[in-house]
Structure formats: structure tokens, C-alpha cells
Image: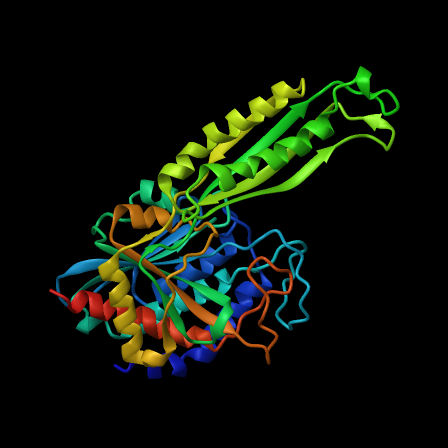
Length: 393
């Protein structure tokens, strides 16, 4: 079978499916309609289907024509709590909910790969697990699915996933890279407590806003003065709330932020670093504080051999000029990382940018859309990855 030719023949079907998902987005752990559609479709292809895995997850098992290894392919299904600002004919009909990160495309692509591989199954030397995961955007569905045994019975020996990307090349290019491919994450919630009073008499108060300003500045010295400059770290305090009116000294300020790292040791050290700096600043300015620091998820670690397999399988289909080595990881978080901790894995990007189609906005933007010409490319590349992996001794 020519996977790319077959994928192009099926393109309209899976564009329709993607648009239906886009029109009807569901947030993490609420993907009931989406998972029902996915499960029924996989059943129609003759796959063995599990539903309600980690709440709304779906797993389809395709057994090949002969015995062999089992490969896993993953797509995430959830949308974001964003009010869509596109004028698409298939724009979201759910107020305040939107597929703003391409997960509707990921789901349609994996369904398409399942159809192609089901047609090809007699030639497969092993099995394929199609893993449709809930809640990648939060609270996280990969680890709960693993904990419920998604990588067992039969045991998965390699995992692959993709992410649509509208910030680089034109639709259909594949970007690959080994090693860390996403950031480890952390979340900080800081409450600085002073003693309120009249703005005209600052000496009778303890100004929580002033102390918070010093905390914000001091936290950036973790990056500039504590971490090796060659180790990427991001500290973004995204909210700060405090105060009552212009002539009142605030007694309390609350800040929240996200922390991103690529080095696992640095990620685990950040709660201590935050606490030490906040404590020092607050003590010097007569304030008290509370810190709630949550370690998030680790980085995706792309296995070298699996990454080169992705490269070779993609080149075979779309040519070397369309398969791009991207050594720089993303500082975004992605819970595919948990799969990469258990089995050799590779996570790659599928380009879908088009200025002519106004597909230029990054993920999580209210005007986000992607060039649907990428859909058959994703279907075909997934299919060829499976064939290439299962054919290997």
C-alpha cells in the first residue's frame, strides 16, 4: 500500500471529522462525545476497543497478520477554556471552549492512521495500540492511562506522538529531534502578607505591594545568578493581585506563575530556590509569606533510535527536503513525557502554517487554526512509522 496516496484519498473524510470535533470542543476529562465517536469508529474498523480508560480515554488494539512487537500511537483529545475569535464556518459552538492547540487534528489524524493500518493489517508483523488520551492540557491524562495499564496486554515496546505546529514551516513538513523535546514544569502560588494602612503614613504599615515587587525581581536572579547560562530556565509570574485603592497600603498580595526547565535536577531544585529567596526578601522587609509550589511534569525525552526511525519513515514518504532537523526543544509542557519515561519514544512536530489560509496564530491563541493539508501527511507518516518499526527485527 502507498500510505500517502491512500491518506490523500481519505483526506476529505478526516477533514470532516476534524471540523466536527472543532465545532464541538470538550475540556479535559469531559471528552464524552469525542471519545464516543472515536470508540465507535475504531469498532467499525474491527479493532478491540477499551473505553473509559482514565475516565474518558479510548484504546484501540489492531492485531496484525503475524506475531511481533506492539507499537503505540497517541493523540490527545481535549480542548481549552478559550473563547474562539475566528470566523470559521466550523467555529466552536460551545461558549468559552475552543480547540486552540490542534488536538482536534491530532485525534482525526490518529483515527485516519487506524483506518489505513486496519486495511493493511494482514501485512503487519505485530500489533498497534491507538491511544486517545484525555486532558493533556490539564489535569493530565497520560499518567493515569499508564497507571491503568494502557502499555500492557500486550506490552507496548515503543511509543510515538505528534503535535501540529503553526509557527514554522508549511503544511506537511515533519520536524524531529532527539533528547529533551519539551519543558519540565512547575507552578508557584505566592502570598505576601504585610500590615495595611493609610497611604499617607507608610511608616505605620508594612507594604505588601513593595515587598512583592522585590520578590518578583529577586526570583529572576535564580536564572541570572544561580543557573548555568547554558541551561534553559523560564520563570513567568503571570498574575499579581493585591490592594484596595490608590491611597491604601495593601496588607496582602498574591502572585501565581509557571516555571519551565529542561534539566530534571534543576526542576526538582526550584521549590527550595523559590522558598529561600522569598523568605529572605520577606524577612528583610518585615513581611510574612506563604508559598505553594507544585512540581508539574518532566520533559519529553526522545529516544535516539526511535527519533531516527521517525526521520527515515517520513523521508521515505515526503522527501528529505520536507523532513527538518529541529535541535531546539519547546519550553511548553507536554504529558507525552510520561510515555517516554516508560518505553523508548519519539514525539515530533507536523507543520501546518499557511499565511494564505490565516493559519498563523500560535497554540492557545483565540484565532488559532491550522492548515488541514497536514492531515493526510500525519496519517501517512504515522502509518509508515508503524510499518517501519514492526518490520525491524
